[in-house]
Length: 332
Ligand code: UDP
Image (tube, rainbow, N blue to C red):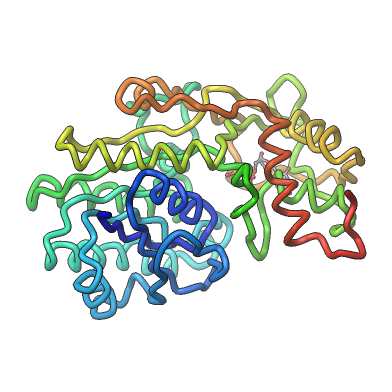
């Protein structure tokens, strides 16, 4: 079976992608420094511990496993932290990716699928967001991802790299079989925080602003199920390996949900109220981010299979209950 190097394969989207790769007949080689990833979520292929900034270690792993391509997830991803410590973000997300691209060139690995983000669009003038929307990030995290898109494009023109920049909207949910899921420390994302608050594992969840110019006053996001995201990574990989050309694609569903709509789904699924504390708007939050997914649909056939918020929340809840909610506090 052809091998694929998966940086960050012990993380949230990366581990789901490993499962999808294995199901499609690839051997995922997880390369992860475990700074935020989890060893027990590496279940679908070999594990190699290492940092993406360590060119020698990368070279030896690539020489041993001879991957046909790289899926590159390893990165720091907290917007607020990137504002406070941009140097760390540029080193980890940008400089390390250059090291990875150099190791790939040395070993003639010519395809890379990269987890980019809708944060590269900053505050868009119009929604839904197409890929032609100007990319004007408003924080170092978004810039670091945009810089990697540029690195890949230039490596494509000069050295023949085949690349895919997959700009995710809000990755959400967990593997429907419960084999992997989202486990961040600290957890900053809406759905797991609302679930933790409903389970009593957190006193209350801050709701960042109810005075936005949206129908119910709360922010609207496009929540895309991680199982769909994982499958689309494999489809992008197959597209590149069959010589169909490089890609920049939005990965979303085209449907927006307000924070209050998400909270209502969490209450229905858990059967418990979500204790809320009203908080000021979070800096850098655009009011509405929704993808126009037509290009991904046309080029990859990337139709979302899970678009119902309750199903998204149910999968997240199943995983979280088994992992983060302490037994004495478990509510089943
Ligand atoms: N949000 C919130 N309370 C939280 C976490 C998130 O009100 O504890 C809101 C946040 O302001 C945004 C939406 O939920 O409007 C989704 O936030 P998340 O951090 O999950 O993803 P982001 O859109 O920032 O990538």
